[in-house]
Length: 151
Image (cartoon, rainbow, N blue to C red):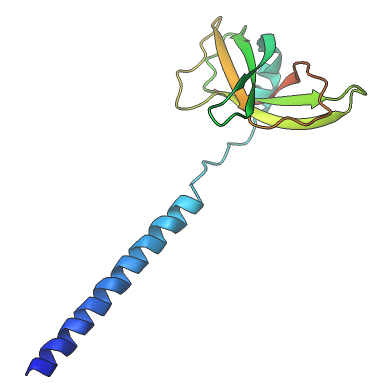
């Protein structure tokens, strides 16, 4: 009778341990591959609207983080000069060296679905941070072009 109880206890314990391991693996798998919403296809209407988006006042700055490393920032403003509300805006940033060769290309998400849309005539500041910049970067603000926008 005591042997049956200890066997049943071991079976219940093994099932509980396996359940915990399966739960931890499921959480790790979900955290390792976050669901990134796919960007919709850029429409001809969106492409035609690119000239209505103006980026201005691009300035670079740097600051020390709490670990002693340097974080580089791009601060700029984006203006919607058109007549449509922009709900999503991605900008391509190209940093160059002293020979004007691209040494870093990044995408900045200036307007996201989590932020309020950019209304016609509105100007909004945005900031992009960089933990590491190439050593041969010329220290100037990047060339900024519209890569994607959605209405």
